[in-house]
Image (cartoon, rainbow, N blue to C red; front, side, top):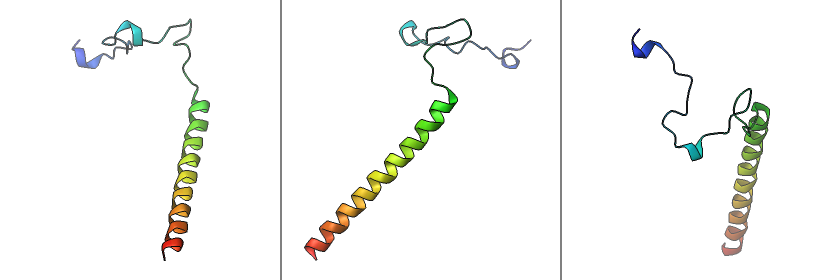
Length: 67
């Protein structure tokens, strides 16, 4: 069969050994779960919103001092 029709499930083919994940019995070890990734995504969004609000508030405060 042609090469393009078969998918190679080994995703570590070109990676050097030091960056390959350690493999356990059922797959790679120390990989975050989907739930952890989803929670971290919300924490990052919240942090970005808080930082943006602080910057806008600080800018407005400086604007009122200069005005």
